Each structure stands twice: as C-alpha cells, then as structure tokens.
Image 1 (cartoon, rainbow, N blue to C red):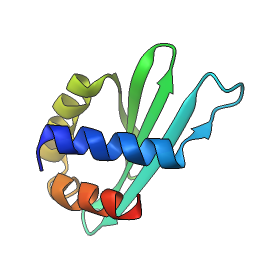
Image 2: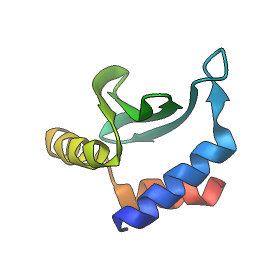
Image 3: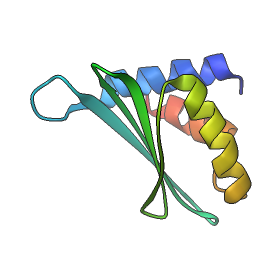
Image 4: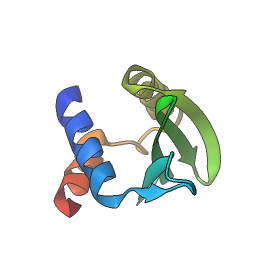
Length: 99
C-alpha cells in the first residue's frame, strides 16, 4: 500500500471515529491492532500544533511525532524493532473496511 493510500484511509478513519479531547480544540482517533507479535496502538490527534501521532507497543509509549513524514519514519523504526507487529497493508485494509 502506498503512502497516499495510507494517509487517505487514516484521515477518513479519523473523521469517522474522532472524539474530542475536552474543549473541542483537540480531537483524536485510536486504532488498536493485535497480532502474534504484540499490540500496536496508533493514536492520531489533531490540534492547533497540527497532526500528532502517538505510537504505543504493548501498552508502552514508543513515540510521539508531528506530521506524516515523521509518522512514516517512525513506523519504519518500529517495524525494525518489533518484526511482524506493523503490517501496513493488512492494518490499513482493515481500517478501510470499517470506514
């Protein structure tokens, strides 16, 4: 799956499932993926700073990054550190299915 498709799918998922973080200036949507390699949680938050991603592996915060470029770079690192955890083709196909 290419980067454009991933961004389109995650943005559409965000729009459908976003929840406010209190005062309606910050919104977030969370995707939880569980497989044999562990549990991956992707949290997309939009606020005045921009689009922020918080990445958790097995309930432990691994990264918090700002913007899509940083997201893709971080997920490359996460994939290397935790083989088999992040299968973007499968994850985003499932995410697209629930939209």
